Length: 114
Length: 113
Image (cartoon, rainbow over all chains, first blue to last red; front, side, top):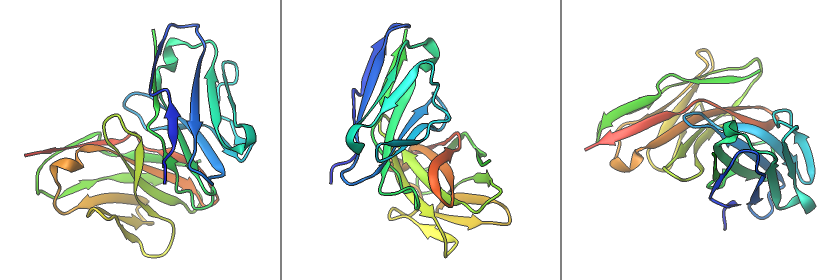
């Protein structure tokens, strides 16, 4: 069974530029999560989807971050414009359902904003 | 609100020695508890979980953790570590309805020969 796929693995941009991250969850998983992991810290949830619906986006900085999950499968997370403080690893995870909460994580996208 | 505290940021240990990585949580409701491991440049992998039932849970590679409700702890232990156990370990908690995981800051386990 293929795991959670993310691309790109690494991205370096200058501040004020836009950037997008893509995630393909494990087949059949209806719940998808985007987390941000700052250096030396644990991941923090940005947004959670149940199928196409964003059910928890309370931690998403909506002035510059946006996300979508078309057709309830793949998802894209966008930052526009990026700031220096956005440098982090962006992790995507998926699960069958949120009840037992066994989440499977992708390898992440390491973003560096110069 | 829930929170997780991992009491040690770094744990150096010699190969074949026992190790304990400490995790305390705070929650006003019942919780699910998890330990994830992160190897360099890789995503997080689930090591073990406590949902209900027996308070002692085990992983396939020799780790175990015990849920202690009275002390609100979920410490991770291994009786004899290997070089390959070198990684970052994260304790996490979620509510009984699932949803987001709340992670601790991580413990870097460094196994030396």
